[in-house]
Image (cartoon, rainbow, N blue to C red; front, side, top):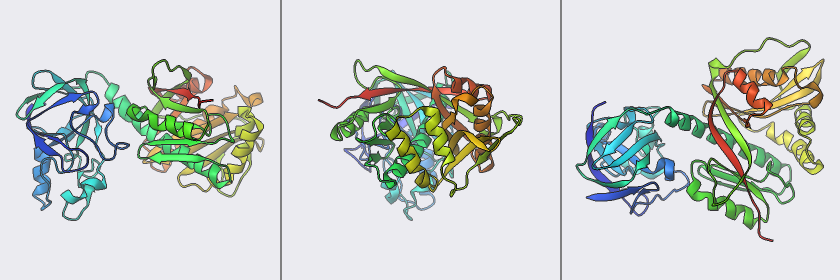
Length: 415
């Protein structure tokens, strides 16, 4: 690793360009004096500081684009190394005590389009141009940074940053999957009030109590916006559950602790065929057995079970959503689904009827869905289980690695 320096510190009251300042204080929440116009896709403690190297700016400018330091919204313009070529977890010791840790690439968005002659802001995308991406960083040690400050690079101290990156992908896939589920319930005629803004999402359903239809997602990465979820539940007069990795308010106690699991698609263990058992994907027009198994296996209250059965025809038509059943002698006794999001296969709704548990059916369902995801191009398979439950043991036996913990915190509307 070669060291470098800060060429320019940039801030704005919102939007771009960010303008140069001689110095700025950096805290765990970001750069003081700086704001993001789109706070549900930028900012938060894990995306506190955005960094771009002048080397990348010069390469892009050489193609005729009107890009310059600060025009694409980076807080720190660096010199001396390609920041996007460094592994996530790399630490940057700046000046007299500030330490940042690279947390993720910064996805380009249309806000920065005017830095490109053809408005194609994807020119800074990591996938197409891996050396020219902006990078986010979290703050390890706060302090003041100044133009010209030296930057000393050091490798990741452990794999925590890599695990966080994978967990973030899992959260994005869960959000997409949950939105499909909630919209299917709304299409079936249920009164579901859905909040979806950038990387956060929540649903509130007064007629369907419980976490299936009253949950908020995205607040592990954006805990600074948790009031958005609380306000959504309060406005709709329902108890709701917020998924986070830390208590979202002082004294909050988790109802449930969930383990997040991930595996490379080609590393999931195969399962030998089970006698008299067939696992198959349901065609979109085959409705009924999947929801019936999920409802019966989950012991759901009658009104929640009816909602699951009523939403299935609409969920079956949802893009990127796949339903599977495990059959014994032609009878559906296990069920699960797979949602594909940006080459990640998210497993959910894994269920086996009580009288058929302990026979390996759940592992067979996981393996079949993982194999399907791999065959259609997924590189990672993810799942969420109750901590230390039977499902956790099953996915671990199949080669999944625990990458994060999410906890469910219940909010209660005022009386």
